[in-house]
Length: 126
Length: 107
Image 1 (cartoon, rainbow over the protein chains, first blue to last red):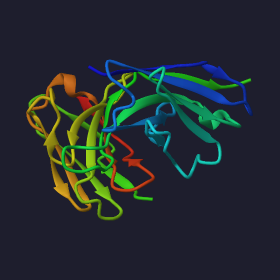
Image 2 (cartoon, rainbow over the protein chains, first blue to last red):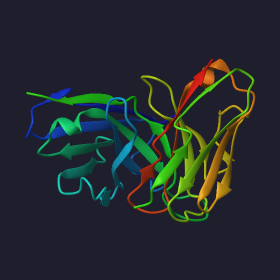
Image 3 (tube, one colour):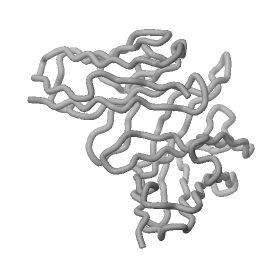
């Protein structure tokens, strides 16, 4: 079955850029039936959607983060990536990547998140 | 932005009890509402998709209902392993949003 794995630095200095990669295994990121997403969760708090990407490179971002976020895809490596610039302590969180259902046999619309990666804690601190 | 409000925030329950968690949307989202379970130090796991559709491999004691603005997750005959935080999520319109979570403690 499809599995997702996040990777990247666990510590980032304030004002720098957070960079994470999600590697997809057991399936192709180029499947037109799915989008791919980043979601984060500050310690002890709830879930916040960061953005979506399609294999074609089409992206949608949360307006609250849009000015600082870039999500990209590398279909040759079956990976997609997150860059978040000008980070502060408020960006300290567990970052998850997840697959998003999109097309069924009858129609296309964004749906549920499954599966999720195990998550990676990124701490912003000097 | 669509705001999802879950209630209660916290509930302490005994095994075999029936639990109901509600999720109210700030505007109609049809059936584009999904439920997740998150145990400590784990990633969320999908329980119910599109308000009432069971997801593969999820125990039958979990069920969902509702449409429009009011949704319910029901856990019949609660088991100790159901101790977790439960989140609802709407995919009707961007930005995607989640409820604040409901933490379930097993007595």
